[in-house]
Length: 288
Image 1 (cartoon, one colour):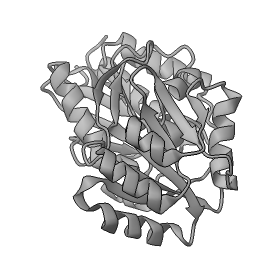
Image 2 (image 1 turned 135 degrees about the horizontal axis):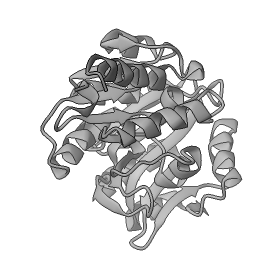
Image 3 (image 1 turned 180 degrees about the vertical axis):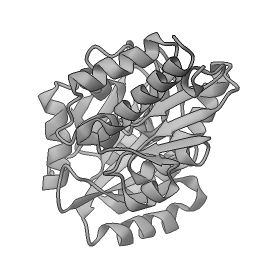
């Protein structure tokens, strides 16, 4: 029996930079490889900074049956329906302070009836890329809002994201973190899709991929090993809770350093190829 199909085992994969190629496409080979894993009995799901609205068009034909982790752990959700099974939102006062300091962030929230992505009328090139991508796949959450602090006061905010020039982003993140204290996690990360512009992200301290994996594992009544696959700094919290940590060759240096295995790059379908090979090796050894 493969470790992939061992009783209670859970496999969690990041999307961008891991399963997806650099142009955000999922190759036919990767799709087929993922489906072979599921068909073999692998308990497979994905954990992403993206929403279910964004995941669905990026995973055409992939048989993801388990709940997914969206927005870095802000939600555990049903991929097909978008229903949120777990929500980790910011405290309203913390969200208000962060919006005040960031000025014009993108605000991802739940208004009591539906998901929203609020944005102001003036978008810099980094934020323009973010909103433009969502317009291309007709994301129904998009909502232009003149008063983002009012949004933070009336809705459950799960993520704030401000696009800041690369050289300024670490200092901006440090300033916001100092102002909100333990009420939020704040970090800056380079965005490969929008060169020159980094994301400064603010989320609940409970909204991490690692915490969400442990919650999902409990809900699924799984008690075996955890294997995770990721490439970026937002994947490090799930590396921290995993027994096996797989990174593609294009992963950030800190992620490669924390990995148990480094595969080929995302553009070569390195992670899926490695997983499929591991399954095939175990089957040959078992004479299947």
